[in-house]
Amino acid sequence: MKLNYFCHFINSTLSNERCVEVALAKEFIKKFPVFTEVGAVLPYYGNRGKKVIDCFDELGDDDRRFSECDIRGENIVSISTLEHFGNAEYNNEKINNLEGLAGLLQIITQSENYFITIPLGFNSILDKQVESILSELNCYGFRRDVNTPWEWEMVYPITESHFREDNLYNKEGFTKNNNYFYGANFILIITSEKIEENISFIPYERTGLDTKNEPVTYY
Image 1: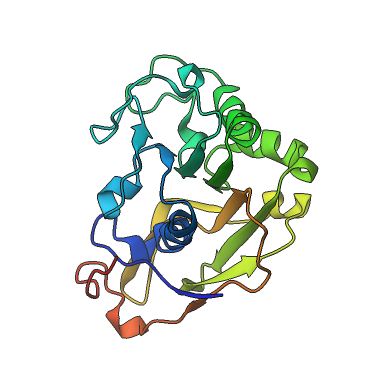
Image 2 (image 1 turned 30 degrees about the vertical axis):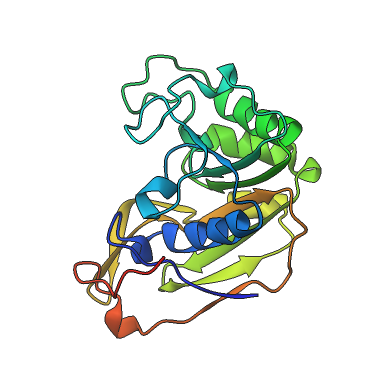
């Protein structure tokens, strides 16, 4: 399967993992158009599920904590969200290092179909927890090299060694060819779907990459 990178001015998607994970999420919701999203991401890019569970984002319409929600039988999308659970972010006062893992287990055990992305390297505690149950997960990944940050390649199968790679996440961001890049260099995708082993992205012209003047937005 060949896809286009997702391009949007919000969060300058071509400069981070959004260009891949949103593109993949949009393929998922083509199959499952009635879905609930955990963490408000897709509403910013033209797609809104029947419900968005997010207690911190203004685009969420269910402000309960995820553990309070019943998602049995739902199709679930969660994009770069679980790594924030239980952390002191977004004025969160309920700190719990098990909340991200609990959310992951809630999705994979209760939902009907699911698509989850986790940027490795952002939350080292969650990374170790996910690594410990890796054999139970149906997952693949996408990786980019800091020398070619505009190119993402599929990684399958996922092994424990992938959780220990260098430069998994750019906490400070970096500049390459006068373009600024930030965010994950390795995305873990956990899904209920059968994994295609040859997912790739069509290269775009690097001359159009400048995040201050991105190419035309498409949905």
